[in-house]
Length: 83
Image (cartoon, rainbow, N blue to C red):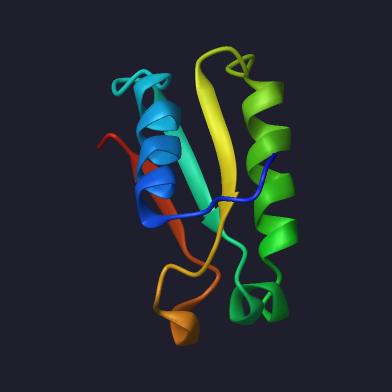
Protein backbone atom coordinates (compact mmCIF):
# COMPACT_ATOMS: atom_id res chain seq x y z
CA UNK A 1 0.00 0.00 0.00
CA UNK A 2 1.31 3.43 -0.86
CA UNK A 3 1.76 6.10 1.76
CA UNK A 4 -1.25 8.37 2.14
CA UNK A 5 -0.49 12.02 1.54
CA UNK A 6 -3.55 13.79 2.89
CA UNK A 7 -6.70 13.45 4.98
CA UNK A 8 -8.66 13.36 1.74
CA UNK A 9 -6.74 10.29 0.57
CA UNK A 10 -7.45 8.61 3.90
CA UNK A 11 -11.17 9.41 3.56
CA UNK A 12 -11.19 8.02 0.00
CA UNK A 13 -9.46 4.82 1.16
CA UNK A 14 -11.96 4.39 3.97
CA UNK A 15 -14.89 4.92 1.60
CA UNK A 16 -13.54 2.34 -0.85
CA UNK A 17 -13.18 -0.24 1.94
CA UNK A 18 -16.63 0.46 3.41
CA UNK A 19 -18.30 0.31 0.00
CA UNK A 20 -17.01 -3.24 -0.53
CA UNK A 21 -18.61 -4.57 2.67
CA UNK A 22 -22.10 -6.01 2.97
CA UNK A 23 -23.70 -3.96 5.78
CA UNK A 24 -25.93 -6.91 6.73
CA UNK A 25 -23.10 -9.46 7.01
CA UNK A 26 -22.27 -10.43 10.57
CA UNK A 27 -18.87 -9.10 11.63
CA UNK A 28 -17.16 -9.79 14.94
CA UNK A 29 -14.43 -7.32 15.80
CA UNK A 30 -11.99 -8.04 18.60
CA UNK A 31 -9.91 -5.21 20.00
CA UNK A 32 -6.23 -5.90 19.55
CA UNK A 33 -4.87 -2.77 21.18
CA UNK A 34 -2.04 -2.94 23.67
CA UNK A 35 -4.27 -3.31 26.74
CA UNK A 36 -6.42 -6.02 25.18
CA UNK A 37 -3.31 -7.87 24.05
CA UNK A 38 -2.16 -7.89 27.67
CA UNK A 39 -5.50 -9.44 28.63
CA UNK A 40 -5.39 -12.18 25.99
CA UNK A 41 -7.26 -10.92 22.94
CA UNK A 42 -5.40 -13.42 20.74
CA UNK A 43 -7.06 -16.29 22.62
CA UNK A 44 -10.47 -14.66 22.27
CA UNK A 45 -10.00 -14.21 18.52
CA UNK A 46 -8.79 -17.80 18.13
CA UNK A 47 -11.78 -19.12 20.09
CA UNK A 48 -14.22 -17.18 17.89
CA UNK A 49 -12.52 -18.46 14.72
CA UNK A 50 -12.52 -22.04 15.96
CA UNK A 51 -16.20 -21.97 16.94
CA UNK A 52 -17.30 -20.30 13.72
CA UNK A 53 -15.43 -22.92 11.70
CA UNK A 54 -16.83 -25.72 13.89
CA UNK A 55 -20.36 -24.54 13.21
CA UNK A 56 -19.73 -24.11 9.47
CA UNK A 57 -20.34 -20.37 9.50
CA UNK A 58 -17.08 -19.19 7.94
CA UNK A 59 -18.84 -18.09 4.77
CA UNK A 60 -21.40 -16.03 6.73
CA UNK A 61 -19.37 -14.38 9.52
CA UNK A 62 -16.27 -12.17 9.36
CA UNK A 63 -13.82 -11.87 12.24
CA UNK A 64 -11.55 -8.85 12.37
CA UNK A 65 -8.99 -7.62 14.85
CA UNK A 66 -8.96 -3.87 15.30
CA UNK A 67 -7.18 -1.12 17.08
CA UNK A 68 -8.24 0.16 20.47
CA UNK A 69 -11.99 0.43 21.13
CA UNK A 70 -11.33 2.88 23.97
CA UNK A 71 -12.19 0.94 27.13
CA UNK A 72 -8.89 -0.77 27.88
CA UNK A 73 -9.76 -1.54 31.50
CA UNK A 74 -12.66 -3.71 30.26
CA UNK A 75 -10.68 -5.63 27.63
CA UNK A 76 -10.51 -7.62 25.59
CA UNK A 77 -13.50 -6.00 23.93
CA UNK A 78 -15.68 -7.60 21.28
CA UNK A 79 -18.20 -5.80 19.05
CA UNK A 80 -20.68 -7.73 16.92
CA UNK A 81 -22.27 -5.92 14.00
CA UNK A 82 -24.72 -5.13 12.54
CA UNK A 83 -26.70 -6.05 15.66
